[in-house]
Image 1: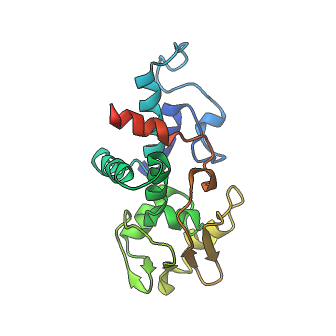
Image 2: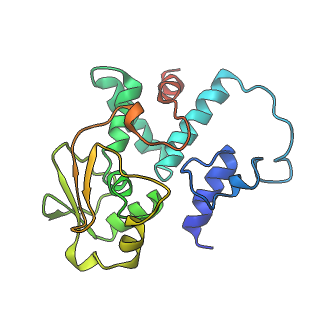
Length: 205
């Protein structure tokens, strides 16, 4: 099993939730946590514990973003006008790796980061190899022509386990996607409930 598979399954087991809704997640078979004490009865978590769990879940969902980078998203979210939790989700969904995952060019967020880093993606015709690149409404994201016949791209487009959300206009025949608008929390097709307001509370302590 590759390290990337281990990483995403480890996140699922630790949180006790199938956060990407994938059929092969070990949580589908065992809902308890990993290790010899995984089946112990858990007490009611503290407010801090609840907030920490919400942060780990959201951070893990986007491919285990580093703490330093995630804190920067928080700082930007509270600086922007409007609801800070909604702003945080908007910033995370504007990541280039998140957009190509949503567009179903790749099967997982881990694969998305690797795909971008290896130079397979262009934004408005220019190659971008930074996974955290912030996409803007109207930007056209495309798989490089020489990469469109890769098995990962062809297979991902046919995945039945998730749909392309309506804030991304994807054309799989051309391997292109237009980011039409920044979504709100209710627009994002998370497989489990995300609580960005608790993440904001965690960092605001």
